[in-house]
Amino acid sequence: MAESGGQKVVEDELCCMPWISSVGLLQNFYLRTFVGTWNVGGKTPNNDLNLNDWLRTDHFDSPSDVYVLGFQEIVPLNAGNVLGPGDSGMARKWLSLVHAALNPDPDDDEARISSSDDLISSLGDNFSSLRSSSCSSEEEGFNSLGPSSSTSTSPIHEHLAQQHKYRLAASKQMVGIFLCVWVRQGLYGHISRTKISCVGTGLMGCLGNKGSVSISMTLDETTFCFVCTHLASGEKRGDAVRRNSDVAEILKRTRFSNSCKPEQILDHDNIIWLGDLNYRLASICCNTYELLERQDWQALMEKDQLRVEQKADGGVFKGWEEGDISFAPTYKYLTNSDKYYAATNSYQDKPRPRRTPAWCDRILWKGEGIKQMCYERSETRFSDHRPVYSLFSVHLAPHSNSDCQ
Image: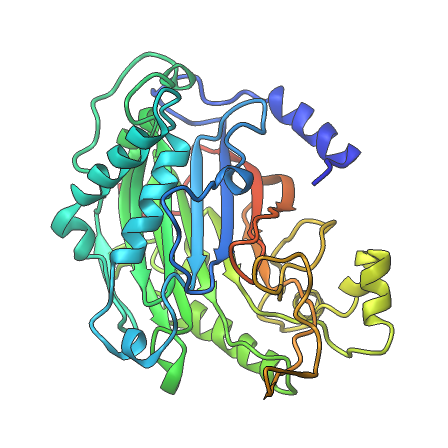
C-alpha cells in the first residue's frame, strides 16, 4: 500500500529518537515494537509462505526491537480441536515461518527453512507445556529458547550477524489463538517475570474457540501486557453485546500472579490489545457499498461498532487508544482474491450468509509511554482476512507498576 505523507513524517521522527544503543540499563530509551495480528482461517501454510509483506522486515529504516505477533484460527475451529487435547503442530509451523522471516539466511532459502524447523523442534517439552485449550492457565518465568543469554556491551543494533538475530521470548496457544513475542538477542537477558494467562469465552462461556491469550513480562523495570483475542463473531442484532461481554470477561478473569503486581491486565505500564475483535459496521444501509467503492473510510468508520464502544460512557474499550484507519476493511474476502465475500445469493445451491466488509482485525493500546508510528494492513491473500500491523515507540521509564523487586 502506498505510504501516506503523515506516515512518512512519523517515520522520520521515529528515526531521530534515542533508541536503545546498549544492553545496560534500558531506562529513558525508546523501544521499537512491531505488533501484528492475523486470522489465518484454519489453513495450513506452505514452507515458502512469504511473511515479509506483513512483518515488513525490510520496510522501515531501522529494524524493530520487539515483534508481538498474534494469530487466530491457526487450526480449524471444529469440535475435535475445541474439545480435544490440542494440536501444537500448527503453532510450531508458524513459529518456524516467523523465525525464518526475522532471521533470514541470504545465501540459502532452503537451509533457512530447514534451520528454522530444527530450531522449533528443539523446543521439545518446553513448547508442549504451553499448549492449552482450558479456560485459564498460567506459566511463570518461561523463556522458550532456553536460559538467558549472557550480557554483552556491544550495541544491540550491531547484532545483525549473529545466528539468531531475534529470539522467541514467550509463546502460547489456546485452540486457534496463538501469541508469540520475539526480541532482539541483546534484549533477551533483560526480560523477567514472564507470565501467561488464558481465558476461554467460547462455547458454554469457557471453551477456547473464542477468548484470549495474554503474556505479561517485564523489560528491566517496565511492565508489558500483550493481549491477543478472538471475540464473538456475527453481525446480527445482539452480537456486538456478546463481543463486549467477552472483553469484560477477559479483563475480569485474566490473572497473572497472586503474589505481586502486575496481577491483572490493567496493572501494567504498557498494554497492547490485538486480534480479531470481530466488531462490524452497525446500521448497515444502502450506501455502504457505495462508500466502499469510493474508499470513504471516514464515513464508514462512523458506523464501526468498536469506535462506538470506545466513545460510549461505560464502554468496555472506553479510554483505549487506536490509530486512524486509512486502509480498506480487512474482512471478509473470497479465497485468494481481492473481492469481498459480500453477496447474499446462493453458492453451489447453498445459502450464503451476509458478510458485510468490516474492520475485524484491530490493534489498540493503553499506556502513557506508547506512541504509534504507523497502522497499516498487508495484502497477502492467504486467508479471508487481511493481516494488520502497527509500529510503536515505547518509552522505557524508570518507574514500574510492578511491586516485585
